[in-house]
Length: 297
Image 1 (cartoon, rainbow, N blue to C red):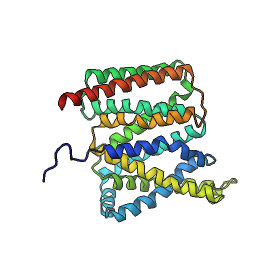
Image 2: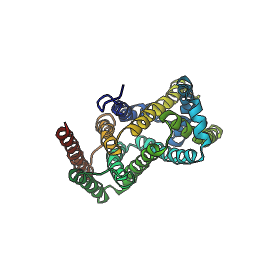
Image 3: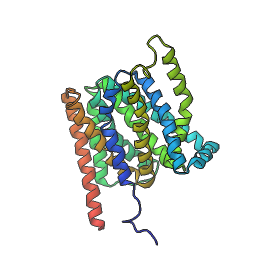
Image 4: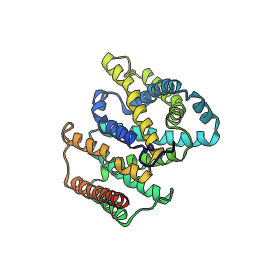
């Protein structure tokens, strides 16, 4: 039986699942706030590897992982994506621990615009006039930050560019979502173990093992790392990159609300103006999507 467009998997459930988890991730990071960002990223990698291998074994995908490791091209591109996602984790965790929650949120508001531009320039996806207006509004929001938030702009741009490029690389690599994620973490495991060992040998010692609650929270880092990345990679392979990018606005909206409420971070006038322009961009883009789908139905 042939699949129709309405029954063919489209990646939307996976995208929503990933972005919901990422949206509420700052609440989890409160539990590990005492762990230095570099050490915590290393522990995330360490605990993600066994989880990915266990799921891959259950899904009979260990052969796909071995094949990807033997393929020089796939191995190279997954090494690139591994570095990009490692950088993204490090900057994001540092930003949350440093109280720059709104800057982190803004980075993931900008990220969909990066996705749109990458999809257009590299993947050949075409944008409508209204979508270009949305891109221009978001660009104006970023430009506004140049006038009053230079100290945190690097956080937002690093998060947006690193994750946008990561998604593009994963979309281009002909490796399944879970096998690809497993290879990425295997590539990073040796540096991660080195970092963990360095902290363990330092005068302060390793954060893991000093307290049962904190140690369990660190182990959970493997779950909150692997599951949303797995879902995101599945969605990236099934959906237009431009559409996927704009669904992502769900996560930074949650982070934005958490920043104002749970983290009690003040919102400056410059930041508010930037957010307003980017929210306008979101509205224009979503309006365009709904208009085109209504016209096609």
